[in-house]
Length: 368
Image (cartoon, rainbow, N blue to C red; front, side):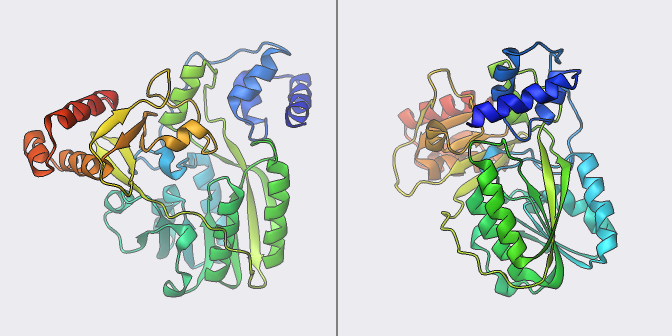
């Protein structure tokens, strides 16, 4: 049913006349370009870009996006649209859930802006500001931050995250406060339309809802560009589009809390590359292995992929590896990031000769 409906949608777009695959990808309501490209190729052929355009990144002061924390950033037009939207609501205290690219622009307009995000590297990037809270929003204790009259959020595009983030935002808002959230579109994956219906029903339970269609556009992060290149998908620009939902809070929602494990990724900035390592409970010898027969480059951004679930090292340029001995590997890479000597680090962390070979392999695989 999903592919049939998507194919009919693509046929409809093509019948209107298209200039390129880029336009088709952006109008395919969230369907991933590899699926759209496969279907479209069976119907027609369109011009496409040879390389993904090198657009300036929105929020250049921020560390590169890494797939460990579902990190897609708004483009400049979206940032401006959201900033321009707020004055009509007369907001004063603003909370940002997982929207770091909005923090600096909004801080220039408003005196009281607080960012909540999982990425520990943001503290240094935004000058260790006391209004930047490194927290897992799924487990946020809303009782300690006071009330806000505006929350802007961009949850990971999974129903459980939306349910938890909607509840947390609703708890933090004053009555009459404004919640602004991104909404994925109906062809994101099979079943996405039904998920959207649940999200809208829950939002309506909390207040008055307004939808702004196709308002949000995301920068294509480096890790996703590399996936397109590996798969020969002709994406030349910023294809990912979302809607914007605005909710004026009228009542406190009581949504079921969905159990999501706490984030246990440690993120390290090394030579401008963001390396994320998921910490494992057991202490084991250091080893490094490839998750895919084709090598270390990820083939999908989806957290539902069974192979990707095994990966516990992710880089901002799309390398994925399976490690053991994650605590000492983290200590080693963090030491390098802070300018420490490799030999001294190996001695300090009790790294034996075989483990040194594994670390050399790791550094080669992540191009360091």
